[in-house]
Length: 568
Ligand code: PPS
Image 1: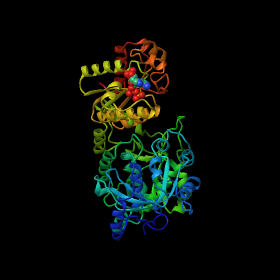
Image 2: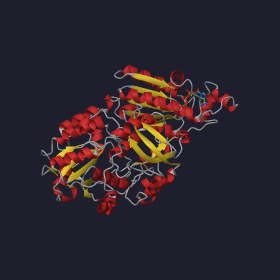
Image 3: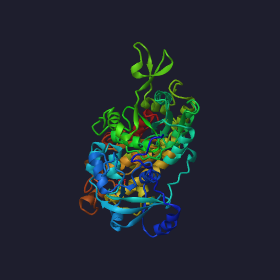
Image 4: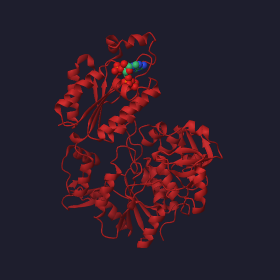
C-alpha cells in the first residue's frame, strides 16, 4: 500500500553477481572519471533508485526536454537536470559508444557509464530555464558557471557498489530498505519532512501536527549530501535530529538520512523532492514557505515567491501521486504556553518567535536561547558547533594593489594580535606564500587563482582549528575571493579588508621599483598596469593608506574585529 515509485518501478542499477566479475576487470581498462562531491551524491540516488525512473545521467534529449517542459523526453514529469559534467580535456578523450569508469575520490570504482551522448550545454539557458535567472547569486547557477565542467556526458550507468559512508550508517536507508521498514512496521501513510537545518520546537510541532492531521506516520528525512553553502554541518544536525526524535510519541516517527545534493531550486526543487520521497515510499511531503529557497538575488530580491513551490507542487500533485501538506509558520503563544499556526492566533495574544538570523546571533554572542524555542540538548549541540565568535577562528584577508601597504598593515596586525594572546596567529603574506607554497607559479590569471585558492585553503584550515589567519595577497579577481570567502565562512570568521591605496599613489611610492619596470614593459601582466584589479564591492573594511598610518590601519582592523565579536 505504500506509494508506487515514480514511473511505476523502483530502479536498481547495481550490477548482478554474475555481471560484477566481468565489469570489475573491464572497469580497470576504461577511461576513468573522478566524481565530484555533487556527482557522487547524484550517482548514489541514481544507483539506489531514489531518482527512479532515471537509469543514468541524462541524455541530451532528456536534458533539453527537462529544461523546456520539466519532463523527460518520454513525457514523465522530471524537473531537475541530472547531468554528468566533465572538463573539455576529459571529454576529448572519450567518444559516444565508449564506456567510462566512474570513481569516488578514493579511486574506488562506483559505476560504469555507457556513453551515449556528449554535448556542450548552453549554461545560460539552463540557468534561466531551471533556476529562473542566470544570476550568480543563486548557488546552483554559481556552481554551474564556475564549478561544473563545460561538457556533459549522458548514458546509462551500471553500479558496482554504492558510495561508501563511514558516518551514521544505521541511519542511512536506500528506498528499498526504507520501504521494507515501513512495510514491516505496518506504516501505510507516511508524511515526509525535508530539512537542511537543525530542528527546534516549532518544527517538532508542525511535523507532528502534519502527520496527525493526515492520520499518518512521520519520516524526518534531512538532506546530508550537499545543502546551501554556509549551512550547519550535517554531523551536528544529525545529533540534533536524534535528540528531537525523543520528543515524538513512540512508534510514530522515524529518522533517515538522504544523501541528496540540493540545488536550492525553489519550485522545481520542491517537485523533485516530492518525486524522491515518493520513491522512498512516502505518501505526503510537507512543504513550507520558500521551500528550498536560494535566498536573495544580486538585486537584493527573492528569487522565488514564498508560495511558488507549494503552488507548483499542488498543480502536479495528482499526476505525481504524492500529496503536498502545506504548513504555516508556527509561533509560540505566551498566554497559552503552546505553539500555533500564526493564522490561528487570536487578537491580543502575545506571539513569541525567534528568527533563524536571531538564533545565529545569539549563538554567536553566547546569549540565552529559551526553552520555549528549542530543547536544551539541541541548543547544546549548536553551541558546540557554533561557539561564540570570540572563540572561533578568523581569517583577515587583505586585498589591494602591489605596494598598497597590505604587508605592512598585516604585520602590524599580527604583532598586535600576538600581544593580546589567546589564539595562534599565522601570517600568509603574498611574498611569503609565493616562496613557500607557490614558488612554481607566475602571474597569469590561472596561476593567480591557484595561488589564492591555496592561500584560502590554508587559511580555512587555520580558521577551522580556531586560529587567526592573516592573508595579504593582491587577489585581483572577485570570483576567486568569493570562493575563498565561502570556503572560510564555513569554518569561522572572514573579514575582507580592501587596502584601497590608489594606483597613482602606489606608483608614486613604487617601493620595489616594479611599477617603473611594468611601465617599461619589462614585467608583463602587472596588476593595475597591464592586468586587471577588480575592487571588492562590499568588503568588511575599506582602508585608504593616504590618510592613515600602518598603526592606525591595524587599529581599525582590531576595532572591526571587536565590533563583529571576534575579539573580546
Ligand atoms: S596574486 O595576484 O594575488 O596572486 O599576487 P601575489 O601572490 O599577492 O603576489 C604579488 C607580489 O608579486 C610581485 N609581482 C607582481 N605583482 C603583480 N603583478 C605581477 N605581474 C607581478 N610580478 C611580481 C609584487 O611584488 C607583489 O607584491 P606586493 O606585496 O603585492 O607588492
